[in-house]
Length: 73
Image (cartoon, rainbow, N blue to C red; front, side):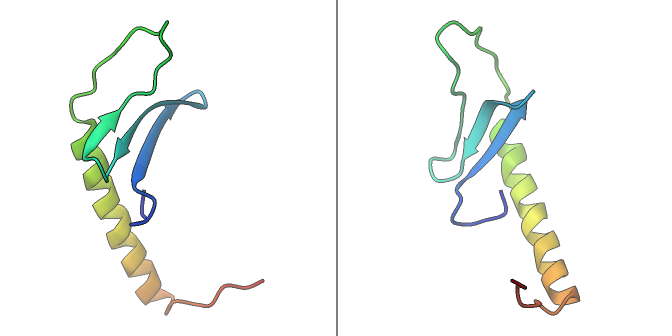
């Protein structure tokens, strides 16, 4: 969810994908099988956008704090 290139933020339950926010389309997608009962999650997309903003802000702070150390192999 922190990556600009990723484009999605997934929400799951018990290891199964319940819904994801598609930032490129600007909507929540619920990939449910045909036999599943549909559900609603009204604040899903707005919450994902907010969480992405917090993640990016935290990442920026960490990069500055650690002076962007090189990856070790």
